[in-house]
Length: 332
Image (cartoon, rainbow, N blue to C red):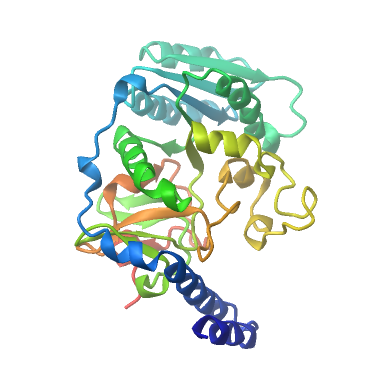
């Protein structure tokens, strides 16, 4: 009955987009509680940091689409240096346009980074470059010793701390069909950290969530874009077999029964790494992603923060992005 009444309210408020989103959040949460309510209330003593990880078996494939600009090589170096610390068994593919790559080679080799440069010849358009990572992932997935697959935009700083968070969270969330999420951040100053993709503050009471201990919950918010994805073999198999590998996914061109307002609003670049975010979404959720939130600090757990190195939005006055500070994300 509650869901029925909320649906009526949603239709009545459709002309007021912000109110419609609030009511849609409530509907999603009520559906989620109906399915998982009992489990949500029993998991109160789980601490992700206590989960053991067998690092010996981990072998990671990483793709970084890199449209060549000399000034961006510094960030690429920084990204690869962080990736190097994730595991001894990593393989980095840098996918770039058909240019001279001497500077990339020199910079990464001097840091003893294992990498391979893939040149895309006769690139039809620069914005299609990120889609070429799928071809590499398909090939590497055939090697069954590869356990994890990461695709990064060329300005996303991903750390071992992030990787461990994903591994531990995935072990817990997989039974729900949920994928651990990250949030992109930018810095105005050392102490001023902004959330890139959040254009509105959030109300925890109106979001689907799973409590795992006295202070931490996983939340399912409406701003899941993160400029990357990370999958294990189960998720990668699902991804490579799905419509998400097609640029027309979500527009009805591939599947006339699947038209997603969330994916329609994404650009060609963003869709190349949105992956499974809006596919096979569990009943009652806004998307497939859940992110760890620390209620004792009223903000996201440090382990799920990834730095957007370009810091390009935080200094743009007219941008809607990077306007909410990380410690002010909750509605009062």
